[in-house]
Image (cartoon, rainbow, N blue to C red; front, side):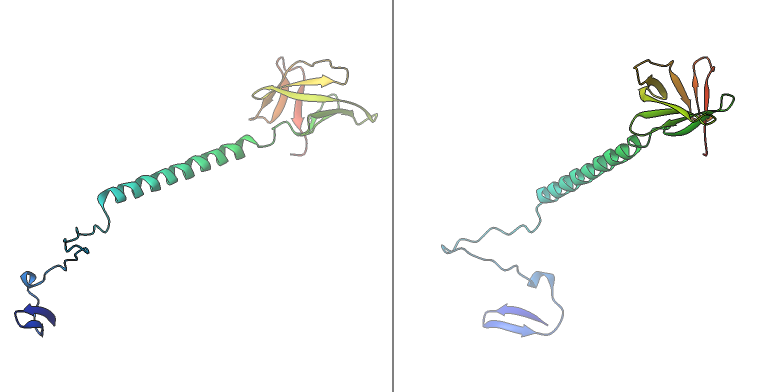
Length: 159
């Protein structure tokens, strides 16, 4: 069923629509001038949407990368924990706040100081009087701390 405009008025007819019989509706403004056809979704609008979506995706990727980097960079320092020097019977406790405590369990004696990271996997110990120890290197494969000449080797205790 379709509507056809004949010379006698609008006629409702049954049958197939012929493409040539369908006419677009023309709208005129108040002065009687035909209005330009409305563009539902101009091509520039699509490009703008694509650009905006691309920028949002890029922002999400950058935010995700920053979060991943932040999580990995804030992991606990590998020397934090309790270490022992077996032949000497000493224990060293490295705390996250930078405190270091050397204990001799046989006598109960202990000394406190500080530790500081000086480079990747390199540390200094500072006594309470400010004396700096030879540098210690953390070996992630052996999970040990040692001086450069290996005269002092700390082995992680309990872990």
